[in-house]
Image (cartoon, rainbow, N blue to C red; front, top):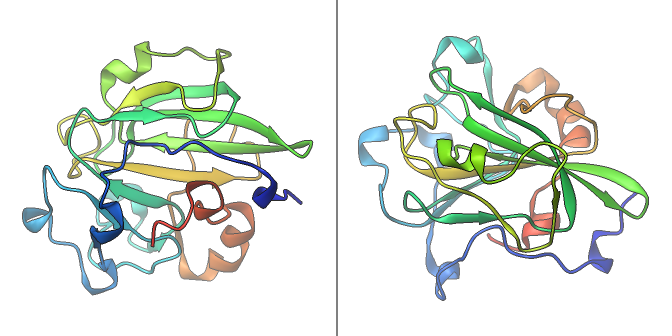
Length: 198
C-alpha cells in the first residue's frame, strides 16, 4: 500500500491562480460537445457515471464510468510529470473517441510501482520524451492536443493512475458498471497525487 501523504507531488499542469473557482463538469446529465469550452479550464470527475458521452465503437455501448480525472484547458498547455519516473509506453491511440497521443510513466513509491497515464496530448508530445527516458518531478513531458488529434474531444488532459502494469500506452478510461468495484481497486483516485481539485 502506498502512503501517498508522505510524498510531495508536482502539479501536472500550470493551473490558473483561481483554479478552485473553475467549473466542475457534471457529465452524469450528458455530454454536449458543441457547448464544451475550447479555451477554458474545468474538471471532469473520477468515478463518475456519465451519459451520452462514450458512443463510438471503441466503448461497446456500455462503458461509461470514468476512471481518471479530466483537466479541461487550452490547446498547447504544458503537461508535467507529477514525480520522478520512467517513460514506460507511448503511442498515438488515433481511433475516434480514443486518447490520441498518450504517454504512460512508471513511478516507484514506497517500493510499489504506480503507472500514470497522460492522454489527449499533441502529436509533438511523442517527440518530447522517449520510452525508457528518466523524467524528473515537475519536468514537462507533453502539451495538450486539439480535437483533430486527441480523439475528437474538446482539449483536455485525461490523467489516470494504475497499480497494475497496463503493458501498453492505454488504460480503460471508462468501464462498465458491473466492473466498477474491481476498476476502483486497479485505478486509484488521481487526487491522491493531484490534490483536492474538487
